[in-house]
Amino acid sequence: MAVSLAALLAAACVALPAPSGSTQLVTVAARPGATVATLRTWERRGGCWRPAAGPWRARLGRSGLSTRKREGDGATPTGTYRLGSTVYGIAPDPGVRLRYHRLACGDWWDEDPRSATYNRFRHVACGARPPFAGASEALWRISPQYRYFAVVEYNAAPTIAGRGSAIFLHVAAGATAGCISLPESRLVQLLRWLRPAARPGIHIGIS
Image 1 (tube, rainbow, N blue to C red):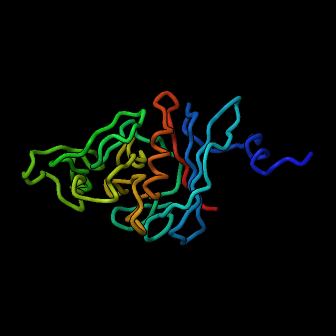
Image 2: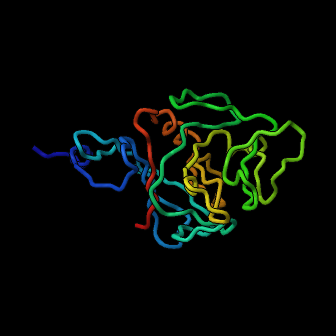
Image 3: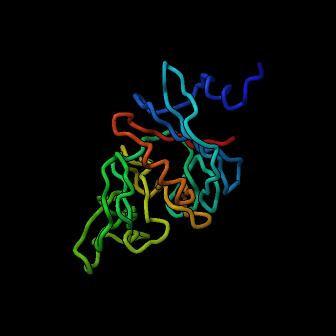
């Protein structure tokens, strides 16, 4: 009896780089210089990584992938990272299982390499000038990209000044400044799939 390709893939045991303890993984792969990538999701069962969803078309930074990411270079960093425990968004919670923070006036991402809170979420009083500068983003104003987003914990532990900041999985609107983006329906599907206990991770690499 013929076996379908989908069945073969579902049965496959795949070795993938992942953060320690992760049982959910997002993989993003692209050719050198490309700004379009293939995104897949995986679950670890019985010691094996098995396909969960995808392949889906994702967008990368305007400079493609980089092994030497720097602030403002427009590149998406390669490597293996955890996904943050909080999902953010301008829109109401779409039903995620991770913690959800609905963005409000005064919610920023600090992208100032000189700041002590570089590459972190910050809230300041609505209408106040933030104490950090650089290319820091007023998150509640950026739509459709930040209708929903998850944080890729790149340059997070430790945070190194100038190594790059604000790498997110967000809603697609063309090439990004270094983030990974998906059409909103796909992104929401991915965000609803993530589970805190699975300690989800992401691997970004060259295909």
